[in-house]
Structures are given as C-alpha cells and as structure tokens.
Amino acid sequence: MFSPYTALFGSPKHLIHLFLTSFTFTFILNMRTFIFKASLVVFLLCLFFVQHISAQDGTGGKDWIQLFNGRDINDWVVKIHHHETGDNFGQTFRVENNAIKVSYDQYEQFNDRFGHLYYKTPFSYYHLVVEYRFCGEWRKDAPSYTILNSGVMYHSQDPHSMPKEQDWPISVEMQFLAGLNDGKPRPTGNMCSPGTHIVYKSQLDTRHCIESGSRTFGRDEWVRAELIVLGDSSVTHIINGDTVLKYTHPQVGGAVVNRFDPAQKNDGQLLSKGFIALQSEGQPVEFRKVELLDLEPHRHAPSKYYLQYFKHN
Image (cartoon, rainbow, N blue to C red; front, side, top):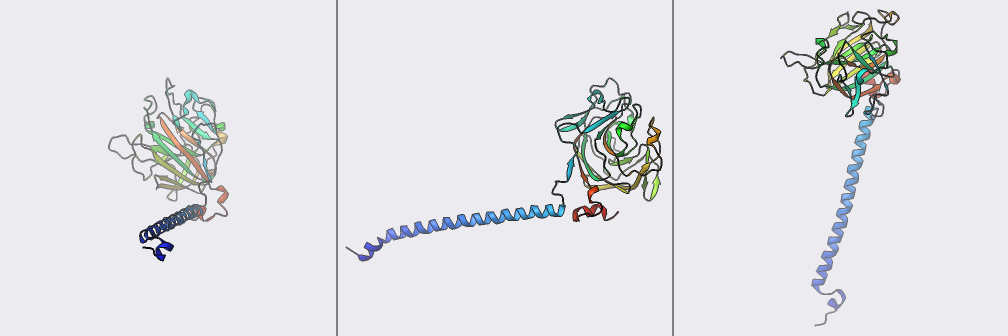
C-alpha cells in the first residue's frame, strides 16, 4: 500500500539503519576528537613538567662538561713515574668499550710506575662525577696497599711541572677502594694527601689518609663518586648519593711525594685551583663516566639552582 511517509522517508527499517549509521559516524568522530584533545593535553603537561624540572635545575643538563667523551683520551695528558710527561708507557691508559681502562698487560714488571691521567684544563670551583669499577688482576709486584685501590686527584700540580722521577703529584686525592672479602670494612671515597694537608673538623689534619663514612663495595661493582670542590674553602665527597666526607682548606704541605721540583712545593699555600687526574697504581680499573659542572662562572651571582652550592659557604 502506498504511503506518503514511506515515499518521503523510506521504510522504518531504512530509517533505523540511517539513524544507526549517523550515530556511529558521529560517535567515532567525537571519540577521535576526544582522543586527540586528550593526547594534546598529556603532551602539553609532559612538556610543562620537563621545562619545570629544567628551570629548577637551571642547567637542563647543558652545562655539564663531558671530560671523557666515550671515544678517546685526546683531551688528557699522561704522566707515569720513571717516564716523561706524555709517555703512555705500555698503553696503561686506553679506551675500551666506551670506558677509560687502566691496564698493565704490556708491563713486564711494575717497577713503581705510579701513573696519572690528567684532564687538559685546570678547574677551581666545580662538581665532579666519576663512575668507576675495579676489574682484572692486581699486579702482584705492586705495593700491597694498591690492591683494589685507585682514585681521582684534584687541585693537582700541572703534569708538565713534574720531573721524570717524581712519583706522586702534589695534590689531594679522593681515594677509591673495594672490599678484600676478609669481613673487614674498607670504605671508599676517602681523602689522601700526597704533599698536602687539609682542615678536618676545624683542625689542621696532617694524616695522609682520612676514611670516609661509606659502606664497603665489591670488585666489579660500579660506583658513582662525586666531588664538590669550592676553591680553597670546602670539599665534599659523595658516594652513590650519600655525603661521606667533608673538609676544608686544602693546602700544600706534608710528605709522600718524592723527587719533586722544590719550586712546586710551597708549604702552607692554599690550593684554590688545579688539575684533575685519574690514578693507576697497580690495580686494573675502569672509568665509564667523567663529567664536570663548572661552578666558577656562578660564584658571584648564582641562580636558584647554583645557590645550593654556595649558601653554606
């Protein structure tokens, strides 16, 4: 039977089909719009969060200097006892698997060849980060105290000022140690002072080494060591995020260094600047990160981030 309604709009079944198709299309379109808007909101929130953190940090990671570039040691200078500055005897210091490696596989005998790898530029105020681990076999013809022992020297004399037969640089050391599996504590991040002294607990301390408060770490265990140096005022040692030692006023003085140029050792002189050096003294070790935040440009007008370094000094 003919119906004007059916002629104009079609059958009820057809109308239902049209309605469902239109509803589905509208629903999908709205959902896509909702998902797009939600994704945009999430993206903007993430961007705001990252910018907020960077603003708080004040550096955005850009001010950190990678002293070790992960490829070579072209920016570093070698000085090994019994050898002239620049002579990397036996390729003691080399880069393998994106890490600086101290190795003695080309040594016939150790012969007290204490060595140091110096970054080319001296620094005064800075935050240094070094990640290290002990590996390989200790040289049994090295002194017994050097087993699972290394370190980073700071405020060191220029390696070019060291005679061929000078054994240790006039410097201060953040000493790295690992446990000997004898059940005894052997903390890392200690202070040692070849040709120097420091002020500890408000008193001039002439001991060669002062133990930190760190726990004992095992060999083959990566350790993050941080050193905050503020010129000749304060020094802070940090191990895996924990402050383990603090002292002040590093200065020239004391023994341990031998056959140095007397002009380089003015006892009592405060050390406000110097070179940074990685140590070799008989134990293979790897350094996978050496980076530095230079605080010198921010001393007099520090931003909110840098203020944390100076507010207690």
